[in-house]
Image (tube, rainbow, N blue to C red; front, side, top):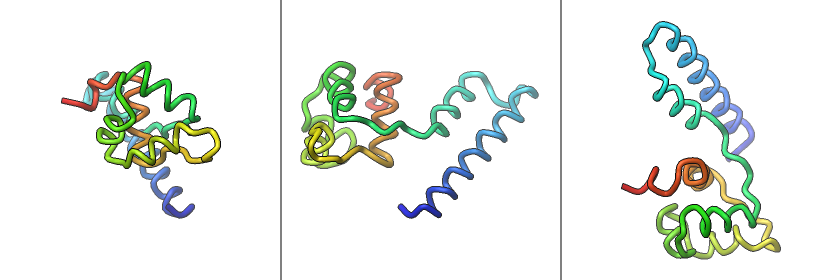
Amino acid sequence: MSRDSRNAKSRVLAEMMEMAQALQPHDLISKQDMAKMKLICEAPPEYTPERVTAIRVGKARVSQSVLASILNVSVSAVQKWESPSSGKHPSGAAAKLLQLIDKKGLESIVA
């Protein structure tokens, strides 16, 4: 993703958050929906190999292949994320889903 498209995405998310905050005092958005909006608009952190492993083993309690399937990535991608020497980190939708698993547990994304 180019820097311009990342900036545009950040701007749109900031505007969505601003609108939700403007609606809240008028009871047009619930506290629960506001919490969801904050989670959606918050940029995921950059995950270290140790953190990815901790989320997979400690929070999700799944194998690399199961996590790969849940995140819709290859097993190789998960292996690289967990390898300190690879320099690879989850990004995009995978990073956002990892953030949700980390904060709310695997149940938050698997029905």
